[in-house]
Amino acid sequence: MAILKIARMGHPVLKRVAESVIDPTAPEIHKLINDMVDTLEDIGGAGLAAPQVHVPLRVVVFHVPGTRLAAEDGASGQVPPGIPLTALINPEITPLGPETVEGIEACLSVPGLAGMVPRYRNIRYRALAPDGSVIEREASGFHARVVQHECDHLDGILYPMRMKDMATLSFVEELRRYEDKEAED
Ligand code: NI
Image 1 (cartoon, rainbow, N blue to C red):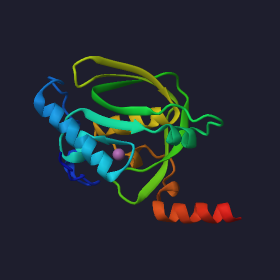
Image 2 (image 1 turned 90 degrees about the horizontal axis):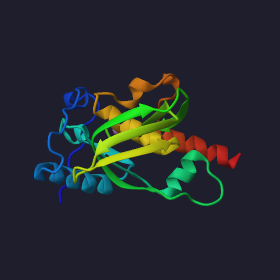
Image 3 (image 1 turned 45 degrees about the vertical axis):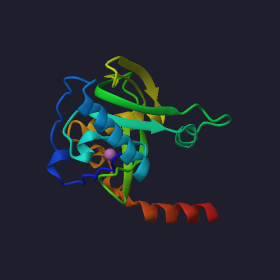
Image 4 (image 1 turned 180 degrees about the horizontal axis):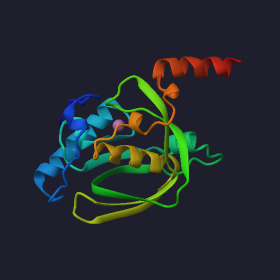
């Protein structure tokens, strides 16, 4: 097990287009994925892309607990099943329609900040799993947002580059303080 160091905005590895993985079943790819999972569990967060741990390969890991899906997508009633920990190798995203939705995003490579980012509401994504099989899923809402955010890292794109209104870029601490005040009012 290894906890990897996170590259921060400004590091060249976050700006380049990552390379496709030739053999998803290779031991070094499995080690990378295991270390990325350890790092994600240690640091917290929904997802992590290989360039964020200084490895310019097209690999991401992510998971979304059902409670987070319910909170982010505003679902009422029963908590939906979460998205289990998933590793995507050479992922490809196809938007299902032009509809976009704004939501607040943060990134381990842009520590302390958050901002409003438009993302496609509905997508299909296809990738290889670590055993070489094909993963193909449709996703919407926060699940779709997480996948789009992580896959952007593979093309050298950080969420601030997707923002339409830079006035929404905020320190997370200040956002929380403001939210607490709103809750009190
Ligand atoms: Ni990120």
